[in-house]
Length: 266
Image: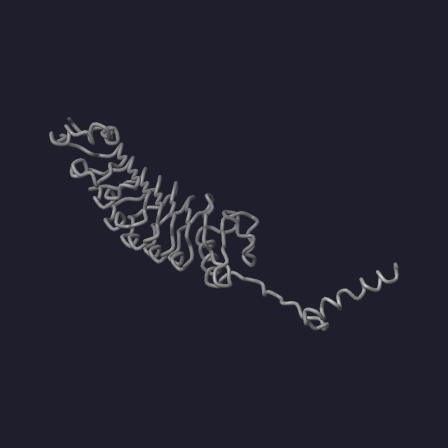
């Protein structure tokens, strides 16, 4: 009985193979080739690395030849290769952001902080898949490039505590997906564009800048939201037709506190 069971177990694989019509010859294993990082992405990331200090400013674990060691750089497999989709530039970085950053075609999230100088390159408009742009606590100056209005997938924009200046381009407010804008602690001035305030689902924060005009139209038309715009340079007498409406009464705290010597008079 034991011999019969042993014989059956030995023959079982052959029986199954015959029934299934498979060959007894050994099939070669399919080997999936190693997926590598896109060459253009690799070269651009190394350029960003070099232009923002490199070396100890990015951490000792970095190996230029091995993207697996690139801390704060995230990749995703797209069309058979890895693409860079998320970069958080080291808070210890020093230097300027190169225009080549605009060639990272799959980049969705860019965090920039540290001792970064210069301006925001207009080439950033080429990042058509960018969803989050955060530039905080840097030495970055200059104006917001109007080309930023081409980032149609941008959802959140943080330009906080930098040295940026100039008037805010109307193109920024025309971005259809942009639901959060925070431009606090800069030196933006002039008139707040109405385009920033036309999306009722959008949150806008403009505190600690040098804006001088917030159009009265935003109080009289419900399609406009009221931004948080404290500690700016708003000045003047509140028109009677604004002062008497509920929208003013409920939201005037958003504009109450201005820089010394400025403020509204009711």
